Amino acid sequence: MMRVFHCTDKETAQRILLDGFTDKPEEPGIRLEDLPINEFGFAGDKALTLEIPQELFDEYDCTPTGYWMFSTARIPAQIVNQYGPPKIYECEHTWVELRMMELGLYEDWKRAGYP
Image (cartoon, rainbow, N blue to C red; front, side):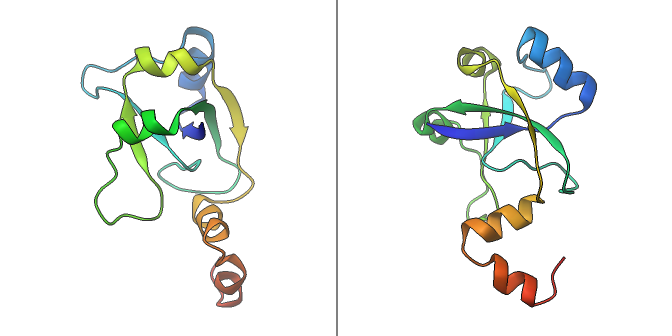
């Protein structure tokens, strides 16, 4: 099993917590990442999190080739909801900080003067 994250606005998150994930006609599949990111990546962001099988994530992985910062999958809502309900996750670090920690580069990165 792996922990995945779905970032969205507060109103949508509340709806998901009550009713589960739903696919949008214009965007099939629920976007899930292996890090709690959003388009800004600021510390303190909220995300929804749940555990799914690694094999499931791999089957729907749509991460661009060669991209290493985080992985993305688009999994149909009907499948994602089998592993819910999700929980709210509060992130103390930006997604970049989390990836640097995972790679063992965080201290060097901070010493180099990155935020």
